[in-house]
Length: 365
Image (tube, rainbow, N blue to C red):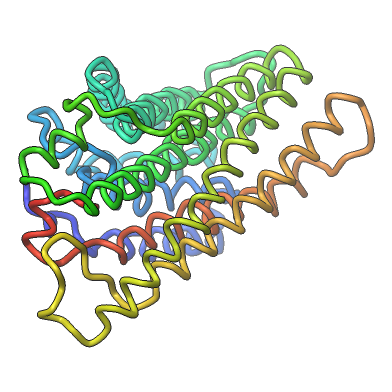
């Protein structure tokens, strides 16, 4: 496994640089910048790299095929250039050439996800594998958007929105589910004294232990609802409503577990180990103050608001009733999901990461 500082703290700097370039381009009339471009930039330079620098968060403790995923910026920079060119009158061939590295990168992640799904026995490993598959779908739609290939009945804007949807509602959401369920499972096992090898076997699902149904319900509703929404946008508004409702219910259960299981335990850790840098028990991670619970709480309420708006929008479309316009929907729904839920959630788990070597070896986060 490559060391964590390989990409490390640079992802926020990449994002700041990218957004600054976008404003420069916009002011210089070089290209037209849409909000979806900014959200995709955040996914390219923050969300995906932050998750891929610590794949053990989502259940991939040991996997010999994972190391290429740590070089996210090598594929993200060409994709960023493709986004810039997408906002201007540039030939499709040039945009496509810059989008190819991201397509290859995400396709590789999808293959790893498919291979991992065959061996997954625990909820967090299934969610992690599905998240990689969703990322591959996002790469395909990103390629279609940059190439300008016609996809009926989608407009070019809808194609790019679909790519963004796969990166956030698919990849980031299932990755956050995997992080949380691995944490919950590890905390349940930490209460039982057992050797390290036995603990690792439990986290990988090799000991025959049965898990509660709630994680499986979350994964089924979230992944299934996401798929139904994608199909419903193309074929049936009723199917879109069913998918949005299923995904909202799955995320409601996820948020409930976050607020009533994860956040209280993180706060307990923060209070218990505040100022005791060298007194952290080897079986528990040391947290950076109370930042993690605050970010995860903000992430939870953001997704509740975002999904309530999504269901309201889907109901209006399904019954031809009055609903908000798509542009107004995106102005509220997209920031809530991208920044409020995904970004705050990933940063929350990053602040909650352990710093003790023995906790790292135990694989509790």
